[in-house]
Amino acid sequence: MVNKTAPMKVRSVWISDIHLGFRGCQAQALLHFLHSVETEYLFLVGDIVDFWGIKKNPYWPQEHTNVIRSILGKAKHGTKVIYIPGNHDEALRDCAGHVFGNLEIHLDYVHTTFDGKKLLIMHGDEFDVIVKHSRWIAMLGNAAYDTLLWLNRHLNGLRKIFGYSYWSLAAYLKLKVKNAVSYISSFEDALARLAKERGVDGVVCGHIHHAEIKEINTILYCNDGDWVESCTTLLEHPDGSLELVYWAEKFEQFKNIEGMITAKKAA
Image (cartoon, rainbow, N blue to C red; front, side, top):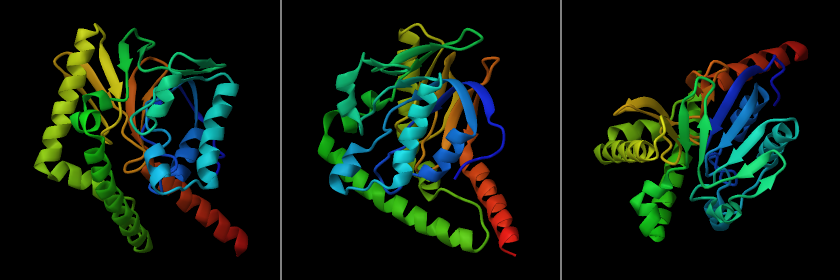
């Protein structure tokens, strides 16, 4: 599924928590986004490939291969790709420091925006006590999350039949459960404190599947979200300004237009 309109040109793109190899990955929407943008820098902020999911329930459709090809294609044509592995693709942390043409692998990275802001980029699982200290508990939680995403897919299948747009059940519940809200807030505060200690202006992370841009004690906190629940990305425009973009709605609009064109051709 290729976007035939002229791509938007930005300076930097941050995406994370794609979870290739997992059935909940919204690869079609991501491919549409990747075909819709030209960027100098592409930051892959962890959990790009879901080795946990692949080990438990092998799944790898052609669309997931196409995502990898699209990313490598951008690197081949001049985009600097910085890959910062997360906890689901942590095996690649052993490759930190390696450079493969325009693709580099780092544990974390400091990026300077066009207007001079220094941003620390990291996945963020280092601040998740459950993941860091008790893997089996994390895996148990991951199984429950898989079930929630299964419900999410089927719910949105019904919503589509009745003409409603995409809506994330998982994201909605996350904001309604008191413990989840408390966890998100604690996570954000911890990342902001680290950024301050490192002497940078802000931090960009992923991991918790909760897209956000806000200021915390003079530190700019950015989370680029995910491509399982919300289909979100963080963009740096040519002037250095940052924008959080929710791509699910744009992708739905594209599919509707494509469907109308196909119907006209068939008529």
